[in-house]
Image (cartoon, rainbow, N blue to C red):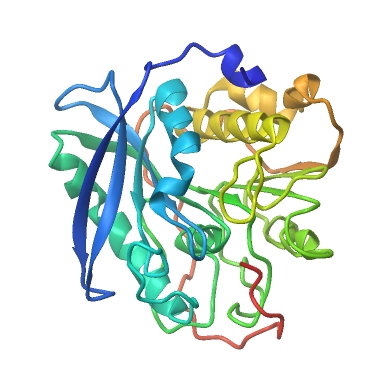
Length: 317
């Protein structure tokens, strides 16, 4: 059992899965969805919820082992859509419709309350999170600027979680993180992509002044210990991913002091057989956010992105 979860009582034994779909005007399509709810949640309850966006060519089901842990140990609900490039959808296997994908992410976020409402539940605190190309969606939803004329900011997201985050490329603007003020967590490994691609994955942390956390795992690949998206099963890294992400949700949603201490002081390294390439924390307030539902921080002077592109680098998804 992972170190952090081992010292944190489980909220529910299992997560209850609901398969459904929702119409998206932004993509002119019906979007398949998986919704995971802790079994302890009852009708009319308020539950903290994560909109989880998969990577390019992935599917909502790829991440069920990870999101089930968030439900069973943390008591968090997840809404997991199949994006346009999912094999279950097949509309954009090459990922060329990136602007539509980002617009769909924002529309999906707006529909989460009604989706949980059909299950008799209310959304508490809320976050957009994702892996690989999904991490770009999460970063944009929380204030990152890309070369696009649409307003892609998700007003209800308190902050984000990005597994294998994307750095600057030919879709981002100059200073793409200049408007980001929400707490963000970035997790990668030094084998996350060919050659030194992992270094570009550290750029969101390096270029934002928002409250942020970064961890780079030695030998960590694109799957973060799971076999999804070119990854391989790696139990130590998988435990690290489970622990880090669960602690982040406890901190972001509940200002949990134990989670904050565990993240801030590097307590997760105690149970790890390896050292870490890099571990950085910037501007994380010790009290986190209030334990009750709060409004996300306002982003000053935010405008729909229309600026110049900064990098000619191709996206690393």
